[in-house]
Length: 145
Image (tube, rainbow, N blue to C red):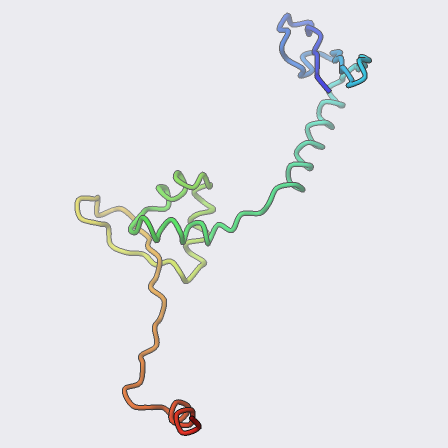
């Protein structure tokens, strides 16, 4: 299906937005027929709302925390704004994730950067110490061999 717009009354021919109370739009169907529709401001608003709803329903939700964690693994001591710009996420969403997720910690700015920089890094995962002596479970396993 291709879309052909008739010139709106304002003189701009490439727009299909309702420039006045009504505009007409011609839809060329795959079988060659042309369907002409009259668009009012109300119909245009309904079409825009339907397109937004369709976009929300077909959009796959991003896992912002994992994206930020992967970014900070490669770029430690980055600010929320740097993370947002690189990952194309809103600043406030980045700050919300950084503040809420314990995997992220505030760190001091790297040398040569402003001391006012609020830098973030991925927190190191806790590693449990390995016992020096054999544990009861490992001793039991070695006795059964």
